[in-house]
Image 1 (spheres, helix red, strand yellow):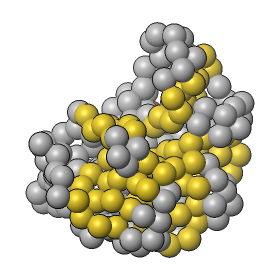
Image 2 (cartoon, helix red, strand yellow; image 1 turned 90 degrees about the vertical axis):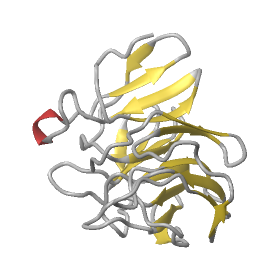
Image 3 (cartoon, rainbow, N blue to C red; image 1 turned 180 degrees about the horizontal axis):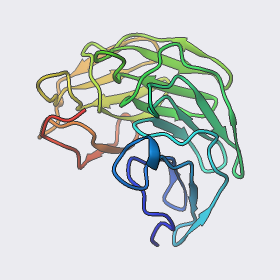
Length: 213
């Protein structure tokens, strides 16, 4: 089924039969076009959920349809705020230590993971969420923005992105404290790709191979 509101730069969470899509932009990304709209998917159709407190782009998310998490991103500046979804409404969560955009996310609402992104430069920072506050985790070996992420807080995967200036095909694995570089690399180096799955059964698709933050 089609989304009710055509939007780009959205974030997704959940499963095929209980999906969640939220935030983004209703036109070319910019402050005047930011969307706070949330939609829920039941496997065949999308229905409206509660709006986010802050519409945003270039952010990350995690969790499930009834326990979602959205964090960081961009409005007119980089954000460090996070929001939690209970299946009907969003409430403010804890702030990240580092405001950033174009980062990756993984995990659950009560065990979230934020890594990479862009501050005033490309970041290698990782943060872990316990349902109320963010704490520093181990740094990525390769700082990058626009990367893909999947898995859980103690078994996550990060891949692709922009370092810059070249695009990256590198893959890293997180064990809850440390990132290690995997010998497996993407077939095509790219940024702003989409992702799904776990650390051991991940999917990366789409993205850009031209320079654009």
